Image (cartoon, rainbow, N blue to C red; front, side, top):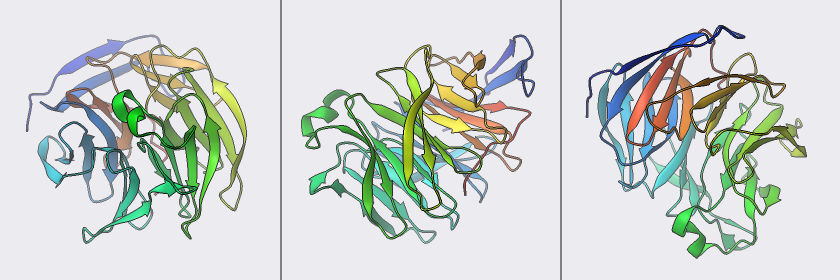
Length: 288
């Protein structure tokens, strides 16, 4: 699918890293519900069209094709340092890894003998530690067997542990530029939690670092300066200290975002029926 670019000039007051004036460009549209964008070092963006059960590939500026049909209602996606794709397959209750040859294998599908509910978003550290969230939205709760909403850690050896056992729903997940802080959005509490990550990959010291988010926080990403990008009512940009820098208004309510393009200075945003691109003056912090 291709669509004419839609440019929306936004001119709010200048702030840190000069977010004063940005353009929101629609680069693809016609989908049912977009999620899970991720930039490939090979020069393309992948994102999920969840209800249509597929992963879409966009090669800039606007050429799209189907990357995978029958994706298991794929939601969040990310890459590791070796170029493997990791996907949260909500309908299949699992995390998968797709190698560069296209072979798909299950990384994790259960905790303490019970299947995950609907893995939602995922991040992989440079040294191969996997972190993902497992909430339940809508009828996903009908299959829930684990008595909490989890934030999970999978070691490079495949051992699975719970970083946090919540009664409210975690959603987006991201790592700080140095990989030593794990951030998790909580959609019910409308806040962002943080955890310290030690050299073994263990995450601890849970705390709330951002509160009062406008709208429901979903996907999150971090730039090289440590600023945190939260998809909510729009795209809210916070400093690492939790101060709101600005809100980027969007034509549709956003669900997730990812830095991309060769210079990593474009923010790709999935929002309902479309994929958008926002050029920035700061690079994204990408673990892979």
